[in-house]
Image (cartoon, rainbow over the protein chains, first blue to last red):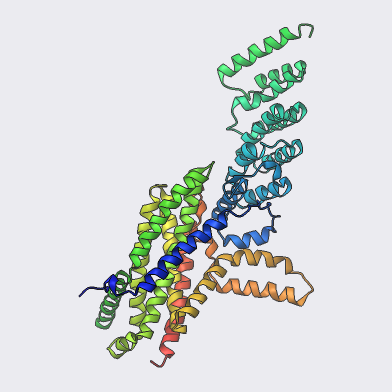
Length: 238
Length: 261
């Protein structure tokens, strides 16, 4: 015995009704897509406690969902939302709270350093850099690379050499407790000082790096000695 | 000794019936659909995530699998148990020379074997992303969580005989057990309050926390992503599972023996 009756047993009216309602639904939805789209502003952050309740005890999964949700704010309904239209005060609060939920992820710092920094608004750029600096102090061992990136951004994007110098100074101050920090990050300060015309300080810094054993790679030591010589030649009276 | 052997044989038969019921109710089609959905989710996240792709995929897929396992097992146990009341097959079993405890233990055994199959299949899927001790810890913890869900679903089904209240009770219990730690932390601010309502909230949350297993400590995604799990944590979770299983099974038996069937 067949499990189902033949299609011929279905009244024509019902088949027509099914077909028409399916077409109507598709037309309705197509019409909805054409409506004027207004991007939603980034909402103010709820309290940490309320967010923790949403997480249902699994902060890592929730942090990943929150960061993808935050990332999606830059592209709504197929349209790209300029970073200029994003409220950076709320944005940095969201990034902060996501990192508080999953302190091991680097994703929020990546977005801050490579996506949200790309805004033609110096004040907003500084808010992002300030956020990165604060996060560095929370976990220098894992977040040093983002502060190094912030120094480069301050130098080239903001053209703010004192700010770049401040970040590289912080990096070098923490270098002894960050075993995996590569030599190039420790040497950033030299180039900033050189750009600022502080050649004497740059020479002092190279001397310090060479004598206190922070630079161990032989190629880097050769490079620093050459740099020191070049700086000596640039300022022969010293 | 002979009696015990008979009880065990009867439980085994009931467990086999329960597994057969799972196959006939298309449980495995839904289970494989979940796995198919995970593959789609993996592809979607591959396109969406711009950094830490693998960690994001692993976290969200593991989170989804955990919820799916709990949902599938909880709903299946409740529907199977309430069906036994609605179709009156339970009266057929009660008419047989079968102890009520054997009936419950047989059912529990069958559902537990099904839970083990679910964990095994989900584990195979996660092997694509991670191949380590952490996955074993995560799977054992997931199985412990499922055992708790199965026993609670049996308890609620026996109490209510109806899908809607039993499922509502189970979902409520699960969400509360996963959030109770946060609620407890939040209520600590009321500890030294002079408002009676705030003090009542504090003591209520502390009391509820005593009655619930802290499910936020089970099946942590961070074990898979940051390799933070270790056997000591798992041992605590296994002990908690055993204690709570004993509590729920004895409560279910207590309720079942009182019923006039």
